[in-house]
Image 1 (cartoon, each protein chain N blue to C red):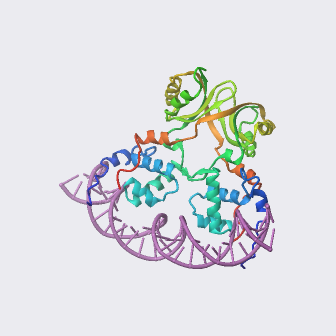
Image 2: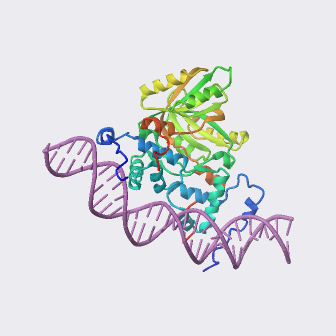
Image 3: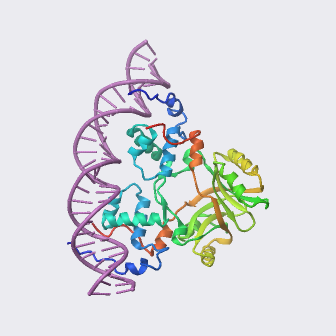
Length: 185
Length: 185
DNA sequence: GCCATGACCGTACAGGTTGTTCAGTATATT
DNA sequence: AATATACTGAACAACCTGTACGGTCATGGC
């Protein structure tokens, strides 16, 4: 039963030289999918589930990490479990004197600012913030408005999150198709 | 040198009965901080770095996971490494016939929709989406507008992300203060 | 057609880690 | 004073990791 499993025929064609930059093949995709819903399993277990050799999984993981596709395996913290039940988006108007960066630096010092982007359109920056309550939200917003360079802030509260942050569907479509579990074993 | 290390005096006071819901003490915070910037280290290594017994780290992790503070350790995927270089925020106006949910379900079927919230204010929903290029963005937006119930979509492109999604500062302030590395050992 | 290359497989070994259990000690609560 | 909880330190077997090796196969250049 040694050579029963057919090799992936035209792998090199997909990854070899061309397409190496963004390439993600099905195995990569399945690996990511597997790790996404059972993150604590090890390399060996992955190899068993995916039906490939351990070294292969190891190599794939290394390459995915190296290419930056997998940025890390840090713990995902749920702010609401820490008492930060309110999420809001704040659009900032910024005094166009010295650009966004000094503002961003100040924003970064506010723990409740979870994320900040510079944007096109009506506003200049968009921030995601959290707070312990609507009252607390006011406090956070005040802090933001107090930042040098911020002219106006308009806030929108997130009521529900029907689609939670996710990337798997993206991986799935980048890998081309169905990433369901293992072939056998 | 057995009992040299002073115990954390008033731990029970913080966690015991009251405050148990959101409580995160400094050790929890340090543990999370540690795992955040070196996610692949194991329980044993954590215990060494934090200067506590292995069982303690294990217990803390279990409890944090159980309480939902740590949602998981899934791989963080960088969409831009997959070729999705463009990030945008789309505010949706929804025909108020049957609520948001049917719309959310449709949105969830679009891989490029990374996140979706229902919101207060001018719009009804706010989505974060990604695309391979500005052209591709048009395609994604079209898909969104095609969703039954979506009346209008106004899009804002994220140009830069000076503050990347983060939760550590939150943990730091929830745990009360400085979470820097280990005490000794 | 031949060979170098890259990806994969299967195997092997040492060393470290995990899961688990246990008794012992300190602190806060009753 | 008794009890419950949290932590320590130690022990054990089972397992996994890092690493290395030789072997196979398909691709692409010579």
